[in-house]
Length: 550
Image 1: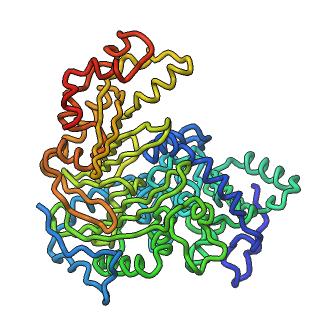
Image 2: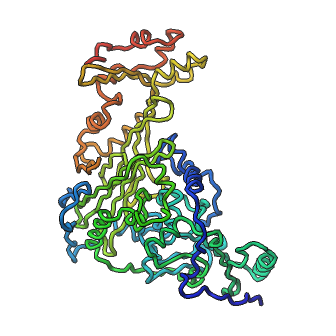
Image 3: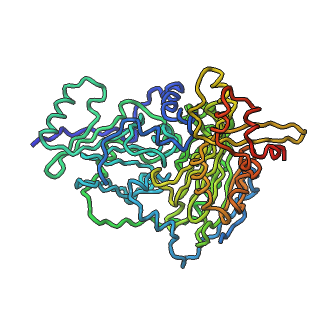
């Protein structure tokens, strides 16, 4: 039988086997990587992240009433360490959120920040990755099962390239360091060995071939390509684990059907206080530790692992924090809000993260990369309401993204949006020779904005009634009982009340008031008057033009 020659492990002073200390990726190179995955924000914002990524090549998959505590504001740090929350009653049963988390498939659970996954059973092979007893590795590993084994990387590598771990689609290729595990027959193993022996590449020897039952485990990594941003971050924060071929070889086991995994007990209230101190003292380390988008610069980082992201930001990120028991079960939730701004092409504007206390410590249950959104809690869901102006000049949008708890994959979330196209753009298109008739299926609605100095602005918008109806139906779910959180400093919770009144208050520049709706008409009414479109013709079809100035 085939047997690979034993390999000499790296020296003990060299974390086995960290990539060589070669020159890191340039800011321009990292920028190119980031641009390739986030440029879509200029079209539809963070909500369409996954729709863009679907086009990237992927590895073939294998089937498989509120009780509050005083808010703590990061904009006004307390003079002494605050008491974030009292430990829950030891007699309390596990929260419903903890039960949901424990029931999650490990390959889904690993998308929730630093929530630990201790055991990755392969869906079809007699193979598993066993991380029991290794807290750091369980919080940091990302594993993807393939028909012949696994592809493994660090969750940080995904964060630095794609920004959102929750919205990363498993199997999409990443440029960070990865480890591939394949289960081969003896003939396949011999072929691989021959190919490796004939190769002149510097990393031709970066693999392990070892017997496994009646087959062979072929384990290879990409450490020979040099450090990635996640590696620099792990060095900066003294992480004790690094995922390479040696690490994987020592943690691969035969799959144990029906194995029961017990999480390590941990004082969640104590962890919450540590999280708050980390936010105050070093937000960059908080984002690394809990796998949030890396918007903060660490003053000790040379080079900064997130250099390309920092270059895209216009404003310094601002952080705020609040604690409350959202569903009244005795287990507090901790809300972290980060706010920032970037160039439009990047669309980076912070995030919302919600952690719950469990018997095993803090666990992420809610996340959105739309930091500019208003977050509303209601009926054990998080609703993220946002408005944006981009695309065609003057084009406006309302967004609503609904996440069950814990936040699931995109296909299991509800999403609605309304696009408002200003009539001034249609007039310009007609002037340039284009036919405005393609918009005849839309409705038109006016909006007058009056200013304190007596001035005003007026615009007429085209919209699709189906989009608006879907948006309102979804928003009605929180009407009268939702709790809204927004802004820096973090405000809330504010009861939503009647949803239409809430939306008018949130978005006063949008045509949402009764006076606006009483003048909504089919755009066909304007087109029927013949070209060219003019404001005189537009006003002539309004049923109540006198309401424009009220």
